[in-house]
Amino acid sequence: MNAPTAVNHLVPEFHQREVPEALIEALKARFGQQLSTAMAVRSQHGRDESSFDVPPPAAVVFAQSTQDVADAVKLASQFEVPVIPFGVGSSLEGHLLAVQGGISIDVSRMNRVVSVNADDLTVTVQPGVTRKQLNDEIKSTGLFFPIDPGADASIGGMTATRASGTNAVRYGTMRENVLALEVVTASGEVIRTGTRAKKSSAGYDLTRLLVGSEGTLGVITEITLRIYPLPEAVSAAICSFPSIEDAVRTTIQIIQLGVPIARVELIDQHTVRMVNAHSKLGLREEPMLLMEFHGSPAGVKEQAETVQDIASEHGGKAFEWASTPEERTRLWTARHNAYFAAVQSRPGCRVISTDTCVPISRLADCLLDSVKEADASGIPYFLVGHVGDGNFHFGYLLDPNAPEERVKAEQLNHALVARALALEGTCTGEHGVGLHKMGFLVDEAGVGAVDMMRTIKRALDPKNIMNPGKIFSL
Ligand SMILES: Cc1cc2nc3c(=O)[nH]c(=O)nc-3n(C[C@H](O)[C@H](O)[C@H](O)COP(=O)(O)OP(=O)(O)OC[C@H]3O[C@@H](n4cnc5c(N)ncnc54)[C@H](O)[C@@H]3O)c2cc1C
Image (cartoon, rainbow, N blue to C red):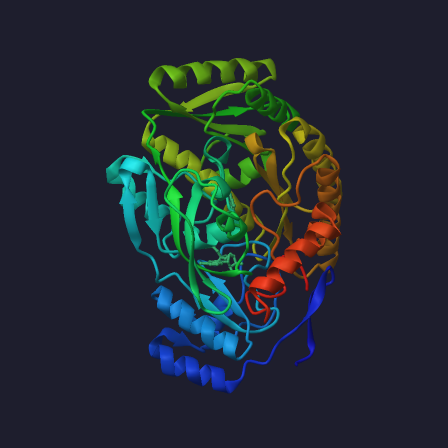
């Protein structure tokens, strides 16, 4: 074993396992050009959007089939070397870092839509299909897949992180939308979980176990998803508010009244300023809700009128509509680019992103005190939220040469998570635990529940080769 690698001062130290030359030779013999040991490729696969630096994996296998994945895992298992599945690398919590060394299995070339069953509203895809690619490919059927993390993530990665996005308030998260999986287990066997049927009572729900397993239990090689008819009418609007509190109280009331809103997103005044600069928009630099309504023309009108009334009770002004597809795309692209706009506002910065989620009635309690703390810290930040779900993200923009900023940002994150847990919420609504939130998982789930997760992990991956050192330590 090599020397321990200190990831940062807040997460444990890890021991890099040796990757024997014999394994690399065996992989070369099996995969030829599909294997890379070039440093540039390894580095690209050894980091994600998180701000940690650890040594990269020893090699990258570019899998093109389930058989490729199974063969790579079998070889890794034989040498007891870690395997880290890789989608497009947009995760935020250190999920992909080779903290115990090992090899990366990149599934981005497994990017075929296998079948579309329009009559049943299901689609089956390989894991490297990205969410935008999927929607482009099924557009002609009049159907769409609603889950939309800000990045154009892979469906495999989204399944593995139990992702969601702006549409989850209406359509749910990956948890509600994955029906069945094909998975390569830690021993290299290929198994299937679930079926295309809408429901099933057949045994343990292995699909749900694997959704959100972050590559720690197996490599997902095929996913069957629910898809939805494109709504007959869609209307989007933005509304500015005098304060974040007014925007949040509006959201709480919308949800509590049961308005079936498709999207309701908060962006604070700092983020509006950054988005204006990045996307050349002229939005009022005040806290803002971005909303979308789906349904029949009459239903959309009714929803919009109800929301407008609620918003005006809370000082909402300048309700602006975007009814053409082009206007809507411009608006939602700007929202999805908020992260990149923020990064550009402080060139060279690293980002720590928070991800707490609380029951809707607790949203104001959780968010407003956290805004006060972030303001008092002096660290530049952006605030965006899938507030209809009670989920929001502070992104602290850190100067990499000012370690004290990182310490402060971690303190803010700790205070925020403690507050969310006290309000019966979670440390992560959608990004997952990865490396960064391992300590928080114990606070949230308790030692007993984490021990049960460890028992499952040991049973399914006795050599601890599947993305080891993530979610919890063994
Ligand atoms: C700008 C920006 C905005 C974002 N917005 C959101 C958001 O709104 N909602 C949200 O949920 N997330 C968001 N994210 C986070 C990220 O996009 C999601 O976590 C996404 O699901 C990761 O997918 P990926 O393909 O990039 O996976 P990767 O980053 O490649 O991998 C993520 C994890 O999944 C595992 N994995 C990947 N593929 C497989 C597979 N086939 N089998 C088993 N395990 C696998 C990896 O080992 C790793 O642990 C955002 C990220 C960025 C950069």
